[in-house]
Amino acid sequence: MTEQLRALRGATTASANTAAAIAEAVAELVQTLMQRNDLSAEQLLSVTFSVTADLDACFPAAIARRLPGWDGVALLDCQQMAVQGDLPRCIRVLAHAWLAVDQLPQHPYLRQAAGLRPDRAS
Image 1 (cartoon, rainbow, N blue to C red):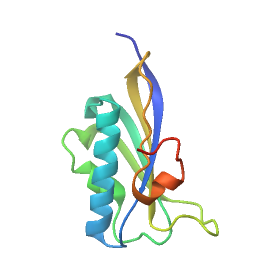
Image 2 (tube, rainbow, N blue to C red):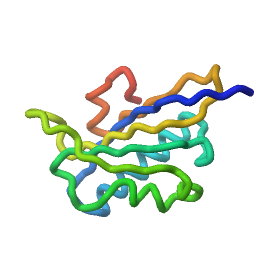
Image 3 (tube, rainbow, N blue to C red):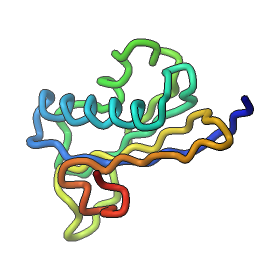
Image 4 (tube, helix red, strand yellow):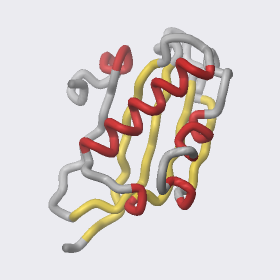
């Protein structure tokens, strides 16, 4: 089966600016991204997390780094551009992964972030 490098997007929100709330949201987002795209950690090349300025209790990449097999994935955190009226406590993800050529990428938008992309929410 031939694979090609694909970019996968997604987003969620944390219920609070605490390490526990951010960890819960990141774990749910990553698990959903992996399940919907039938991914294994070996297929991931890199993952970038961005967070709104109101989330500073922990690094999302540090949470993802603890997942089995993710020690070989290039991980990065950054702060989302501050735009007036943006969705609060939002965590976005951009993952680069090897997918089968005929596989349609699935981009999960969870919790309050579902409003950002109603066409992708479920």
